[in-house]
Image (cartoon, rainbow, N blue to C red):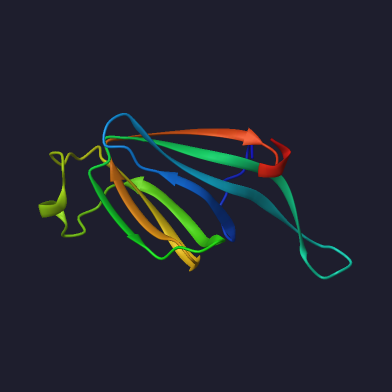
Length: 129
């Protein structure tokens, strides 16, 4: 995914592991859509990767839905905004807090606010690993 910004449209949530201390993890199978169409009429997908978001200091979470296959319409990673949920925060809020929002398509619908986020990419499909 070098040089391109993934939207995570139609990406699949592989796992979400929450820990009270230490690093929580969100794993997503993503790719770049090429715009080409295969003989069966499906878009050709390229540069598959398993993207792991390491979350430190998770302080707020909204979690809805779950399925055997959790597909998202998109992923938003940004500085945290005021969502009127400060009474839920387990840590003091700060202007450097980060939020991840998984825009649902089918299954999991997630919003996470954390102190720090680090990201790693492992090239290939999940089955390739």
